[in-house]
Length: 228
Image (cartoon, rainbow, N blue to C red; front, side):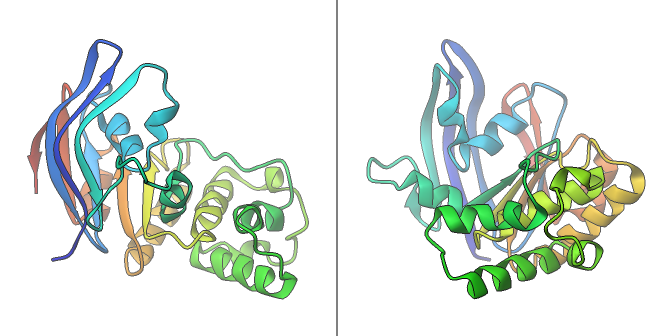
């Protein structure tokens, strides 16, 4: 099995508080890995290390080794912007930009220099289809994304991440703010996406972890207790 991430002896500190204690694990390519455990156990802190979003937290310090495809993400020459392109993030609450559905998905590629209108449209349509949203919004791509339902907004955020052509998708409790029907659609989508992407998801639902994950990692008080 090919490993996308190899994490060894990882420690995370917020000032003098140790949030993660000697975590070592491997993330297998094209699988769904669920991170479970009680609130405050370090799941989200671990997730945010994987694309260095933890860098934005004042007083945050990381020790140990985190490699993606053999490359140390904390090496001095690491291109953090490219890392975050390769490792997309979907947050707990849908966070569409206050612009059209089309522009939400096109925003990232435009920022990275994609100017060709035809190529951009193809990428937006492809991303919306991959996120199982295109059929629901194809006639209103120029409407505000804020008019969508919560479940549609979350799938739009997934499409926005997919438009950057990532290798990995990080999901921080992506269904916690959704109703059961919208949750089922996102779970079904995750099963489809793992054919092309590696997915790491934080969830508080043991049932959800059982339904969608290939591997589950149990965290408690900043330590990885069990994985399998």
